[in-house]
Amino acid sequence: MSRSSNLLLVAGINLKTGIMDTILESCLSYCCYCCSCYGDPRHANLYEPLLMEEEKDAANDLLSYLNTDSGEKPTINERRFRALCVLTYSENVDLQRSAALWLAEISEKLLQPITIRLMKLVIALLESGDIETQKAASLALNNLAVHGPDCNKDIIIKSGGLRVLIRLLRSSSLEVKCNVCGCITSLATSDLNKREIVVKGGIKPLLTLAKSQDIRVRRNAAGALLNLTHIDANRQALVSDGAIPVFVSLLSSEDTDVQYYSSAALSNLAVDESHRKHVSKEGNHRVLRSLIFLLDSPIDKVKCQACFALRNLASDESNQVAIVDLGSLPPLLRIIKTSKKDTLSAAVAAVRNLSIHRQNETPIVQEGFLPELCRLLYEPMIWEVHCHAAGTLRNLAAGDHVTTILSSGGLESLVSTFMESTSPASVQTEVTAALAVMSSDDDAKQKLLESHSGRFFSRLVNLAVSSPHSEVQYNSAGIIGQVALLTIPSELLKNNVVGILKYLEKFLRSKDTNFIHIALWTCVQLLKDESFLMSFRESNIPAQVKTLQMISSLPLHIKELAGTVLEEHC
Image (cartoon, rainbow, N blue to C red; front, side):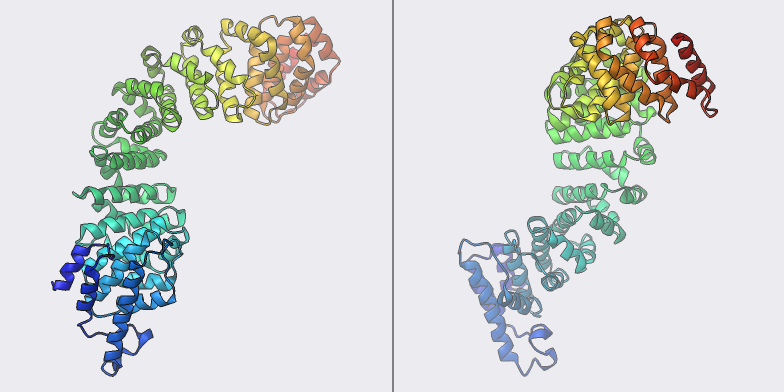
């Protein structure tokens, strides 16, 4: 290596040193020519002095610009572009390297969008036979993708830069591989680019680099692979190319970023049922053990992604019991007690999926989750958490734990969330579903009927009539039907009779037999009340019920229930 090359290595990517003057003077001792746009290479011998002068001027222009601290963001105007072109297409390796280093120096702060013609220069530098030029050029391109405007990513792809980047994933230089992985990670932020990276063959070299001994390379490769898992079209290709064993092995990394990337990638793959099976097959629940271990990570984002991965894996019955048996409940409870926002939501979502299996119900209750779930339902504006907490209580109530839930204050916490007028439809759906299950218990019925001095019952009726969401309507009607098995105070029934008749008429016109069934069943319960019977007879409902009996397509049990209503009516 020449003395000038050695000096370039010392200078690194900081060109604002006095060394650069010496470097450039040394570089200009060589005779070379520039690209065809500045002269015909076939006639280089005729213009040799001019070309040498042009290269010197180009080098001085770029160096002078760096040495001028105007406080403004760097730009590449036409003159600087021409200077870059001269140095890039020079046969002098030192000049090529200087061009790459100059780009690396300004790239992090260059807000000006890059162009196709500038990318051609960068690609030429990336394809240089000089490894130092490749290092600087790959750093520059990474910075342009990460720190520049979003349109830079499109230009990199359109100019053919991806092809070169994927080839450089097999570079002998760790620094080049690290920079290239970082650039690909940034490019893989749009679905189109994610797919293009896979189509161009990026998966296998990235998987190889994810096993690198160099932590920087391993980290950047894992980040790039994570981004590729975000679209379904790529997930099958990743699984087929052997990504799952790589991600599982990365869970054991001591680097928290790698832990985060690999757990998030596995979480994304586990969205699909067929991929979940591949993940679960990794050696004696290896992946489950590793994810449970990460639940105690001191890094919040790692805990969060471990929760998400366990939640998705717990969508399969075969994993639900195993995850509990392997010791997930204590760390999940610790997370619920201490975490906020996304991590809290992910932990409660994981517990919800675990609570689906009957065998897990008692361990969840005995571990002490009920008081925490109730506490969360009282906390304002954490709607996603409310959804999962209510869903968990519903699953537990569907088993043998209604009494325990009642004694823990679960009913009151659900009602409190239900009465919150700003709660979104997703929360209303989950809460009413949980209350509908719990209302099968006689003690729960009585408490619901008396709740909030009757305002709870009135809100149920209102939602059954006017909610734009069919699930909320149906669940609300189901709760009304359950409490109607008790004697509803005459004043409460009188105040809500108009609304009750409205939703009954609405349900009886439904094309869904489940809605018709619950309306008829509720009618049977309410017709035992004399005041309601009088209002019922004055409504259009008896005629509707008679019509139902004549619809041949309705199931027999619906027609029989309609007959029972008419008998009660008479």
